[in-house]
Length: 162
Image (cartoon, rainbow, N blue to C red):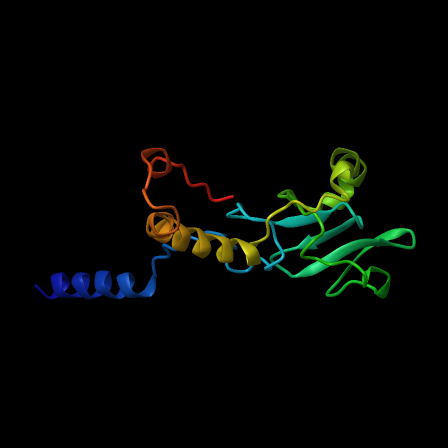
């Protein structure tokens, strides 16, 4: 009986001594994307801005740009980029490590977007979504008040979140 109690104590002691590790690490950076980032991405590692040939690391909030004869990474852009409006310049999502090592191909592929101003950004997306909800809710009431009868064609109108 004495050996049985010792065995139980030994098992109990071992179970407390060896902790079990069961953690799952999921990397989703929805909340950490800047407001000037494009709409429609759950995960973004880098943004490439073809207008200025700069990469932005979303998770570390740092810019990587060509300076002198090599790529440098800094917390802010140098003064030569002060004229750039981050909300208006086009951003390309690049999700592989160190994209500047493949800069020639990336630049060739996305150069046509350098002066594109049509991209929707996160800051404006939430404003449009709330406006669309309001518009959908009040469209019928407004249309009847303004134009008299509410037509079936208008009732079946499709709403888009553009």
